[in-house]
Structure formats: C-alpha cells, structure tokens
Image 1 (spheres, helix red, strand yellow):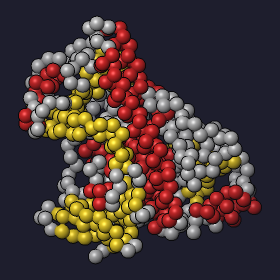
Image 2 (image 1 turned 90 degrees about the vertical axis):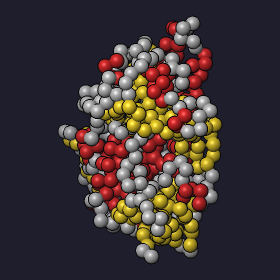
Image 3 (image 1 turned 180 degrees about the vertical axis):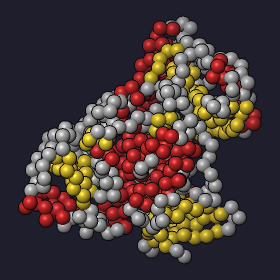
Image 4 (image 1 turned 90 degrees about the horizontal axis):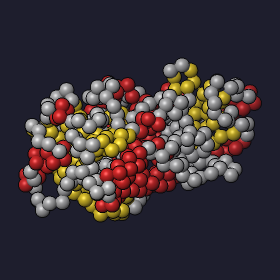
Length: 520
C-alpha cells in the first residue's frame, strides 16, 4: 500500500486548490474525486477580490479571467426588481467599493465548472500531486500513526490508500466528517431549494429591467433569483425556494415556475434541475487527532445569500496548506496544526451569521412590506438590503486571526471586528497584509512567497549585525526589501498565507524568539 503525506478527499475547487498549495511545497499528495468531470452546477459562481488574490498566489488569476463567459464589459452587479419585466428597486456591486489602492483584483463572475477546470489544469505542474478520478471514498479510519482511506472506483473495485494526514473536501454531506464522528451544529432550519440550468435564446431580449449578472425577483410567488451564465449559447440558471409536496423534481412544473419568476412566458429548454436542501451548519471541530481536517463545505454549509460559501472555503485552504507542509517538511512542530481551527472557526462562524442575516432579512422584508400597498417602503427596504448583500468587504477582506498562537498583538491593539460594510486596510498582526504597489503594475502579492515566511524591510537594508542571524533561517524565511511604500512599519513579518504575524520599527531579539518557537 502506497503511503502519501496527504490524502485529499474530494477534487472540487477547495480540494484541488489545496492540492496546488501542497504542490507548491513539493508535498506527496493524493486527491480522490468521485466524478470524472466537473459538475454542471449553478452554485458558487461569484469569486470575491480576496479569492482572486489567492488565484494570483497560484499563478491563475489571468487564466481564470480569460475563462469568463460573460462579456468583459458586462455589469457585475445584482438587480433587485419585481420581475424581469417589472420595476427595478436597487442595483448593487461589491466591485463599486474597490479601487487599485485597495486590491489589484476585482470580484469575478464565472461558472464553478470553469473555475475547477482552471484549478485542475494547474495540478499538471506538480509531479508530487496525484489526482485520481472516479474514486468514491467509502471509509476513513485511524490506524496507529496513519489514516486509511477506502475508495471504490467506477467498476466497484475497492482499494485502500494510506496517509499521514487526510483532508476532507467532500462537501456538506462529507463521508469523511461522518466517519471520524464530528457533528454539524445546525444554526438554522433547512429549506428546500431548486437549482435549475436552462437554455433560452430569447430571454435576454425580453428583459426590460436593468442589466446585471443576477436578478433578485422580489414579487415572485416563490423567492428566487435568475441570472445569465453564458449568453452566447443562451445558458441561464435559477435558484428558487420551493415548499410543495413534490417528492421528485419531475413532479414540479419547472417551466411554469420559471415563467412566474420572470413575469412572462418564454421559450426555454431545461438542461438540468435538482432539489437542494439549503443548510446553515458549522462543524463543532475542524480536525480530529490533528490528523484529519475539514475544509470548505465539509466544515461549514452556507445559504447562497452573499456569496460566502466557496470564498470562505478558499480561505480555509490557504490557512491550512502551508501549515501541513511545514509540519511534513519538519520545519515546524505539529502543534502548528492546532492553529487551523483556532483561526478559521471564528471567521467561518462570522461569515455564516452574515449569510444567515441576509437570508432572514430578505424574508422579513417580504413579510413586512406589501409592494402594492406600500411601494415606497418596499423599495426603500430592498435598496438597503441590496447594499447589505453587496457591501461586505469588511467581512470578506477585513477578517483577522487575533486568537492565535501565531499572532503577536501590539500593545493596546484593537481586536474589534471590522465593520461588515467597509474594508479599511490595516497593517497589524492578525490581518491579511494589505495590497500596495511595489512598482508600476506589480503588487506586493506578485513578489510575496506562497511557501516561506517573509520579512518585509521597508526603505533600508538589513543592519549587518542582524544579517547572519536571519540567514540562519533561510530555509523558512525570505527577506524582501521594498521602497516607496506606505506601510507604517520598517519590519513586517509575514506568514506564508500572507497574514501579518509581527511588526516593529526596529529589529530585536523578539523576532528570533518568535521564529525559534515555530521552527524545530
């Protein structure tokens, strides 16, 4: 039986992204994926600016943008309207809050299967990463210091794989999580949703409200959204809450449902449709025995109100990947792995609460205001809600790891959460290092290492008396000299996931004491 350093259960976007992180670190990795090709699904189409910064990290940001199906000038905004031929109440876009001083990237709209294609292609660059398809994992169990994973292929043949560590990236119904007995905490009652992909060449021409990538249809009998996926082939998607007694999707009149949502009848072809039980859940723990870890939907299940799901999962990946690599390469103690749950749990819980508040407030507006009896109140409430959905940069980019053994807080540093609606770049321990331009068209993210710690030295060379001491950490630390930037500290120690660990305006023994605590 071949032994791997890491087995990743699930080859969706988070699983493959983690494979890339481990591949960058030359970690012997196996990814087991039950499907042959990425699934055609309307889920997780919005990648926020922070996720696009991660794609820069993986060398994939431009590749991903080239795969977008909507035209380059297509407005990336949500339209809050009565029907597709009715009244527009509000328009909103998180990109409106972004500029080149905040991030070198903007959020993009792209189908999930194309995101997966871009990520999977990158795996070809890493000889240490093996990707096996049509492998459905059926069991995960501990054996001495290893973890055994059992999978069945498409011929129903069973095979066992062994690893030092296993990471569950196998979704909200994770077999891995169930096998290691980690419970999901239910944060809100489940609700049934129908996901629909359909083709219609005429729908775009019949829409009379403003153009956008997502239409929130506020006066539909069933709350839901419709949006374009690929206008060149007339491909659209819809998500709608559905509370009928139908037991199978065939018992639902999908064409009438879509007509009701749109506000008119139109020609269409249903490409696929399925029920989806929408949950808001959070795993009680993100790891077991410091050997099996939960990432993405296996650790947290979101409602699709605000685009938090996949973006949160990619944050998990970047947090865990470098820690696993450091422990496997024996440049860090295994205690480092305990910081994964310490750091990510509170971030995930905060994002879940934000998504749930969006969902609750959306339903509350429908209950409180009748558009025919109080059109002004209905319009005002939905305009405010549109901003709440879109303006979440404080949550998506301003999160920080304060309660962590890796974070050396400054004296009297505030640990209050950032305002949900506004991102204010902060150079302080715990925060993701804010973007700055190190030269024309080159961001700090273009030069930071994704595999090593980085000591940023601003405006001067390292004093000679400290050079030799820092060079003794050359196997885990890179020194980056930058000039003409607006960071408020001369010395900033950056983790491999690009969060700030330590800042000061002078070098002292504290830096070395800190590094020695991390390195074996």
